[in-house]
Image (spheres, rainbow, N blue to C red):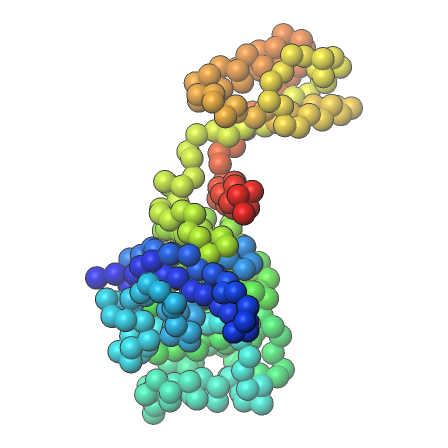
Length: 320
């Protein structure tokens, strides 16, 4: 059984009946496995929120299908197993945090002592302990985001869908949300979330999908999308060599010749093998030493998720 299965999902929008249709999702297919943290990436306007709305049956697809736990998205049985936090949540700000969560708990059929104890439990989990009697209008944007996350996990759902859950959070708050996601995964839950913060994705995701302009560019485990080989090397040495800019050097990205040190970023060629690149780096280091330089550090940098994202999205943008 798959937590989410999207098959050839297509969505058209038409602003007026006399205007042409605009295709915002183009035969998108991917799947999310139970118990994993899945990152859904893409720039603004890529179709992420449209896909999420279809999974929640807020809108309907023009073609294709979306299944949740092997059942059509939006069925009553499925909805009871999903927790959701929208990108820009707006709540009744005259309610207290406790009243807000009691309201959402009642919608899910919760009540009595179990609901009361669960409210205190989820508020503590999202770092909002002691705020249960404070009105939402007194909360900062980040605090509202935390309360929204509390309501998403209140009924202990099997699938948690989060649309930009890091919005409005400071670095400490982002770490706490990441920890919550990992805790949910440890308890057998599935987390599906969209975000622009690629560092968070690299830290916690098992698999990702990259979407742009309605097209799925790639989908899979991080280790298969990100190359493990060196992309470039940073070299820093003391005793600057004044004629370094005159050297016959290939693929230099950056070169800073300062008073006390020299910094160089050496790029691996597109067709260059890892062994050839290593040999070129070693030759450069030897040249520095032979000319009186003293190596301070040689740091190999591998491809990051940001590199993959920019490369794939940029390639598609040039075609459209």
